[in-house]
Structure formats: C-alpha cells, structure tokens
Length: 263
Image 1 (spheres, rainbow, N blue to C red):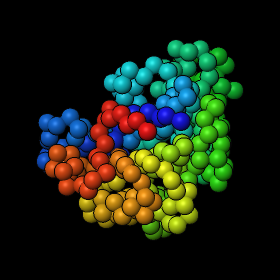
Image 2: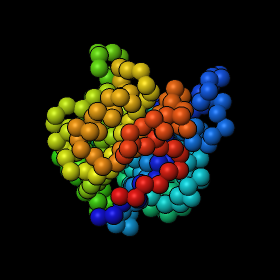
Image 3: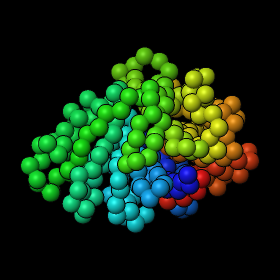
Image 4: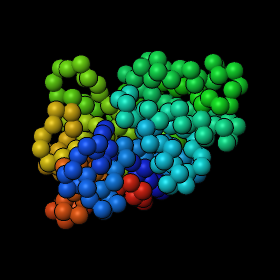
C-alpha cells in the first residue's frame, strides 16, 4: 500500500528554538531549524491517522491544512506527545463524529486519568469538548485502526531506573515504521522491523543520552535493520540542519516540520 507521511513536528520535548537559548541553532534563520514537538500524519488507503498530539497540534494542523483525521495513536504519555489532545475537539466539532484515540496497555490508564473528561461517555453531547472514544491495544500484537493494520513495537525509552522511566511504542504500517523516543533496540525490535523500506527514527543530538539515540547510534541501528531510507525526528537544538545534513551518509535525512515522505 502507498503511504504518505507528513512530519507535523520534528523537535524534542522543549522545541527549537528553546526558551532563553542563544545557540547557533536556536538563533538560526533557517526554517528547518524551527521545530515543534514531534508528531506525524499517516495517510494511506484514504485514511488519515495522527501519531501523537503535541502541545502545538493546533498550529501544526493549520500549517499543513489538516481539516480531518480518522484516528489518533499515542506513542507514550510524556507531556510533549499528549498535551494537544484537547485540540482534537476541532476535528470532532467539525465532523460531528467521535474520534478514536488509541493507547497501549502501558499508557492507557495515565492517558485516561488526564483526558478521561473527553470520553464520549462523559461529554453529554457537549460539542465544545473533544468527543473521544478511548481504545486500548495490546502492544504485543497487530491491531486495526480505521481499517488499517498497525503493528506496535514496544521500545525502551530510558537506560537507567529513574522516576521518568517509560517505554514508548513504535508503529509499523506495511513497509514503513515510525519509532520515536527510544534509547536502543534489541534483536526482537530489529526483527519486528525486518523488510521495511522507510523508517522515521527519533534522534536527539550528537552526544549520548540516557533516553534517546544519538546520531551515531541511530545510523548503526538503521544499518542493522537494513533500511533503504531513514529520517531522523525528535531533534534537539544541538543539531543544525544545514551543517549536519551534509555530514550524514547516503540514505539518511534530517526531518523538518512540514516534510512529506512518500513510501
């Protein structure tokens, strides 16, 4: 199946430019260095599936002329990936229809604790609230969203025990996969991505980090998987697009907000 991916946001949890930072990237005039928090729109078989609802969701949808979606998938419940969920009401109010929002077993309870007020069961027909139908998926098995088969991949997000420890979920759609917010992949993850052709992969910076891949690790991992094209997202302010893109090997690309990828 043909797939179009729009990178709605390509930045890390603090966005780029960061507040009160005067580094080379944060003061760059290159629009590719203006990064809202990471999310993507998957379009295939006439359906539109949103991955994550960032704090800038409204701005991202306006910038990319997105007036409708068929479902929303959540990778994990860190603030930069879910705090735009209330803006989903723009879609439900316009369509007059409820919207399914999907989270894995790991994250469902936390998501519902924060946004349960938007459950269709509790909104009493108030169209000024999001009209959401909360769905839970088993992160160990494929499931179907808006008629599209999705394979979830549970990914380690932090390398050490800490308060913020949390795994994230990557999503595979046919020969394409979207995997953000991970610190490594083990052999079972690599096997789950076998035969994909295009990968969007979370990369934070050049130096190592406890919760995210760096560029060197991501390149090595992509080569282990055997992907033809790899696009880096969730990019921090230590990466300058014009400088660092030219230093990447063939087949590797930095994303930017609004980038469209055809698979």
